[in-house]
Length: 141
Image (cartoon, rainbow, N blue to C red; front, side, top):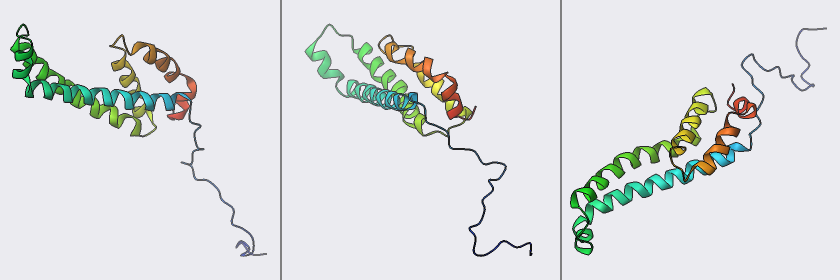
């Protein structure tokens, strides 16, 4: 017998040392992606709203003279400064690699949402399932 494999038999495949089985996607992943899309759209709206406040400051003051012009301009500057980076952050978060960094970015994204009382009914269950062992395995931890 020779040491060469038979050309009539299918080749045998031996996975290399870095081979990993495909990881099972946890249910929280779908909800996390929905959450990130919603938050990205929310911060895009904040950015657009701030720009509109700056563009229409005079019209707002004409409509309601009791409004302070400096306050309108302050909101018009602050909203895009906060909204633009956060909309970019939430837009990128679901596309990060499924490793330790992606999992930590997910924790940070959920934590930012927890600063708002309106988002807490969504972020608290999301956080509970995010720190679950199944999600950690999905991220290779």
